[in-house]
Amino acid sequence: MKFCTKCGKEILDDAFVCPSCGCLVNGNNAQSNTSAPKIAPGEKTGLATAALVCSFLVPIAGLICGIVGTIKYQTPSLKKRCTAAIFISIAVWIVTYLLLVS
Image 1 (cartoon, rainbow, N blue to C red):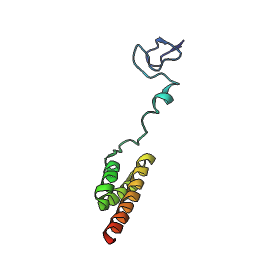
Image 2: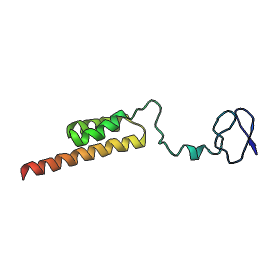
Image 3: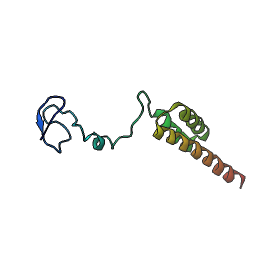
Image 4: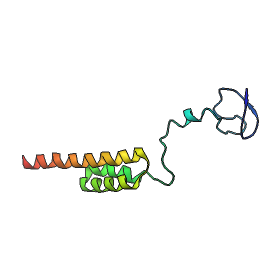
């Protein structure tokens, strides 16, 4: 048995949270944090999402949002979304051009 670091109550060794106070138990935080990607404080995902959506619908807007996002964001997963939006925008432009020319 071990003890909660917040309230001091005795808890089971395999517990994820303290049944008394609800505090996360040390040693199990790595498993509980794997479900959500870490995003830097103050960063919002709106620009990255807009870049991806716009890259399919309005490629110039997707390209601009993607470039701004790669400069603005510090979180690697958000930078990857913006970089993907840039490449998707360029690919949509190329496909549109080829369809219009032929």
